[in-house]
Length: 263
Image (cartoon, rainbow, N blue to C red; front, side, top):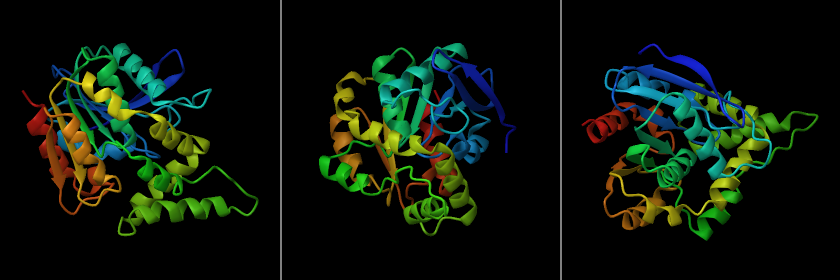
């Protein structure tokens, strides 16, 4: 695996923590935005696959990993503004932008608000959700309710395992710890996605776009409506994959990104 460096970037809201690797002289960086409740650590395997081809930048979303915790209830717009500011500080003028689940919402917002920044866009599992999907997902969001007996810890483990009981225990442990660390920000990020009108951004997205999802992704059904709204987009479905597509099908995801983003 390529050597991954970590750092912090000052923004008006607080510090953004990020991972970086690869060819720092590459003309167009690849920026990776993670799902909830993960952090940029979810991209370490993928960064190892892509380091020979790109300058890689993977920030932690505000409230997750080691980035600042928002002072108020966050919205996708806040996440997008803070990450855009961080990229500006890093001297990024154009990038290929990849977002997975919550990261896809943020990536779409950045692309709509700062089209000059995004040369190509990849939305992995875009949460273009119906009211029925939102209602169902709300029943699965775990509120921050710590208790004297520590049931909250075991409940978090159960929630993460329920996403994919075949996931390695190591990966489930990592995600459960990140969920515990996020505390109330976990549910807040879900609400930010639910309140975000992702579909309203599509008319403002004109760059080359790729849509992808695992065959068994929990929001796989969002892919076709998103593709219909973005007729310029390519679409890939990765067979046998689910929510943790970047960890379980790393080589396939890397190949898709490399083919799409390389000049």
